[in-house]
Amino acid sequence: MKITIVGTAYPLRGGIAHYNGLLYRELSAHNEVDVVTFTRQYPGFLFPGKTQREEGEADGFRVPSSVILDSMDPLNWVSVGRTIRSRRPDLLIFKYWLPFFGPCFGTIARVVKKGTGTKVVFICDNVIPHERRPGDRAFTRYAFRAADGFIVQSRAVERDLLTQFPGARYEYVPHPVYHGFGSAVPSVEARLRLGISARHVLLFFGYVRKYKGLDVLLDAIALLRGRLDIALLVVGEFYDDEQKYRDRIRRLELDAVVTVRSDYIPNEEVKYYFSAADAVVLPYTSATQSGIAQIAYNFDLPVIATNVGGLAEVVREGETGLLVAPNDPRALAGRIVEYFTSVDRARLRLNVREEKGRYSWENLAAAIERLAR
Image (cartoon, rainbow, N blue to C red; front, side):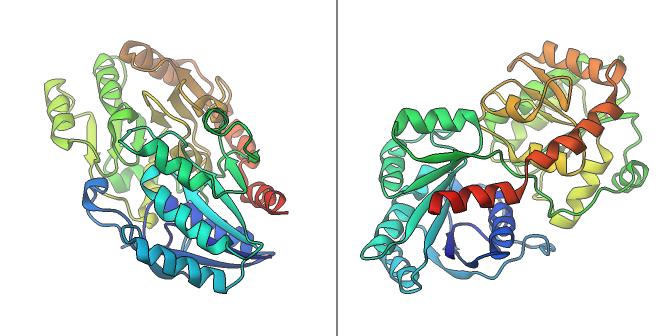
């Protein structure tokens, strides 16, 4: 089968690029696959980060791609659609996470399908975005009306899809594990490299946005002062006001406890942060799913998460991690204490090692191929 993937991919960076890179590798095992990615992905107001291009090593996610798509130029969308149509793909795949891309993806899909038998599948991270803007619903409907099928990776997204498109043809497949960051290193080595001496280490990883609940986590850590020898690593670029979090850290007198690295972490360094941690914390106030949990599982690392959206589908209470109600620092602090004082953490790690077999790229590829046929 001839397949074209359209979306963020190397030489661009980030979770979507990583996802598309690993998907390309899996599909390429049995299909002829090409990738189309962006010359310009975002306007400035949608990208508060420092750069959109990959600057570190990317061997785990590097794929050949045609860098030809401009997300803001409708004439370019038509041109790209015609270029893809000339290749006569059997299947066109879009990774969909933001309604901003709806007009672009919807137009390309229509151009490619005109006069061909090409099928279109959208892999949905979100149907309804966390941070809503005018036009979101219209943009999504425009894109999805060009689709022949959908992949949803959480029941929360499944519900959103069926609410908006009751007759949609889709497959539910859990988000695969991100295995492109290499293997874990010994905890002692990772902590020495990062300069961590605390007995217990928690990791908050990824882009910092308001809905991810870092403020709640900081309040919870403040409640643990004097109860646990603990360090919190906050690692990732801020897509929210960084200064307000730093002010909160100072106000709560957490400077000696919380380490902030407000940068995009090169791929080759990711393993050190996950290897140094005893658990990843996802204190989200809302969610559909989180790729961070799938990075944690790659390193056999349990997760402490809020019970929102699809997180409880991945984090099994008492088996691969702990769940807590959102927006409740005291409850979160209590679960952190429980994790370090009464939970068999070795058993949880073993469970994660076994559980992550459910989250395979092979399962995802098989579901996509079923939809296409």
